[in-house]
Length: 246
Length: 246
DNA sequence: CAGTGGTCTAGACCACGGA
DNA sequence: CCGTGGTCTAGACCACTGC
Image (cartoon, rainbow over all chains, first blue to last red; front, side):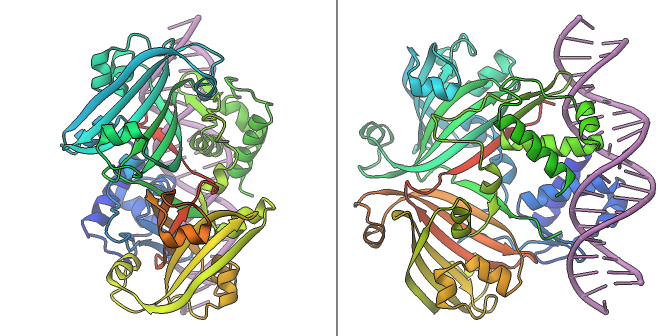
């Protein structure tokens, strides 16, 4: 494990376990250097990460302090920030918490991409997988997902892989590396199909996440639209103000 | 301007203006050091920022490359990433683009905080401002916002400030520094009041952003719920995969 | 003024990919 | 093997805060 990651993890653990309490001043940068036996820039990297996660505030000329965690009416915890900023399959994300996830495949076919999908995938034309799945967690409806992937990039996808985990297939069978994704989030109404699949009533609002995902070499390998019910983990973000603090 | 920020801006500008085209290899880290006359770690910081913005991919042992920008069916641009990750008032955000924003104040009062608001603000009890506003951009309905702020932290807020910009009041009149915020995003249906205020029809889905905002010293100064129409800029996020690339 | 965090340097060393 | 990016060091210098 990287030193800066270790330090960030260690401090986060100490904060969450109340070793450092809200409003406590953390050791100064110099002290942390001595404690962990690293240089200032490494400590700084770890602290920057904790600020990003919302656990810590720094003030130049004053010190670094543990935030009062805004529990946002009890519906948010700071705990899953790390996971929330990583891409992974829905399935592995929930399974790590030891929860059962069930997928229902409504469609799995190869189609000619239309202009919207071509544009999103950055291709001029070609055949793509079209996959439509609903997911349930402990029998509660989680989401319906529409996925488009060029067959040229992801060859040999099988029905079994689709029922299991596509991301696992890509990383472990094709040995491609997934690097990043861009998402746009909006609110929509459930379609009639979605009402049927998810068992929700007409006029249920869903959170739509439109995602473009990149391989390590910058190739777009996936364009997907996922519509989440209230049972999905909500999307969370941290924003930082224009730098003035220190 | 910081050197690493300057380099990131300069490279971003060169990418967006097609000086560096999609799939082009960028100059190596060493070359960039010479070009900008800075050390490797500074170049690295700039490149990391560009990776975060989704413009660039790096591959250890190979090089750094311009991403094919996934334009996500044309509804997303990479251009406003910097702004999107900063907190600022809605008003200043849109006004920077030279667009007229109009606010309608439905409520501006001081109330005793209920348990939900107390919990969100991290206080045990006390009086808070309750502000309910709708915003319109070029006469299109943008959002309705419900804001709660402790009067002990933000004293002396006036109706004029509320009609204008609360964030300006906090930073320029109270001289407090706003540092960061946490948001949770979900989909909801417009309430009858919101339908009336925003002029949208019954059963319109809205994007709800529940936000807790922190001052530089870690104090929570605001708990707000904003419900966005389709005319609001959509929420955007970038996710990074567990590190494997380099 | 002293103490804090923030940025940056020059260079060392490592991990990875490809020839 | 070389060239790439990634992490880290020791220390310099600056900016901000509060005394």
